Length: 264
Image (cartoon, rainbow, N blue to C red; front, side, top):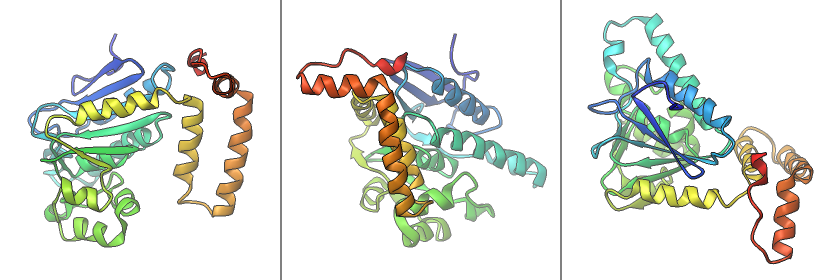
């Protein structure tokens, strides 16, 4: 039985990695079916202990995702707009809070909500031909799925304003220069590279990774003194886990880990 309840969001489990494909032709847009499907899928993956990483990509060769299906907003109904904004928020916040590591394999155009889903991921890998934008203001809208917030955190005020207020579309090379993506790879290889990173994640303790991710995410919202205190608390808490005992002893004894005990 598939973990996804929509054909627009496909998932395959490869080892310890969930490969999620946005598949809504022709431009892999988001709608009222695919957004709840993504939210439900991430929840299911959170409860699938053998999954440590999530890689998300777009079906086909041209689009990672072109964002929202604008037909939903054509009649100007504020209630429909509010419902759609809520669906975007729930889905992408669930993705951002995924307990493992999420990696966006950007294999084409990432526009609007397509870029915002990548922004909700921990790591972004873009193919050299990819282009990214948040063009909502051109059609009288604004990014409502984290674009104004997560983009600013990643690239700073200046570039966030160029991309959002000026409607600037950035190529992969520029996206890498400004910190929007972590790596550029040749055309057709983003998924392969993302899977290689996910394999690195599988060598980590998932309990440790989840704790580290919580601390990193909270860093921009709290004082450094609170963050340092939280860091020490999380460190001590790990000593109640079998992962810590096995990991340290395996290192000291110069042997391989006996297995991912966190799966228990």
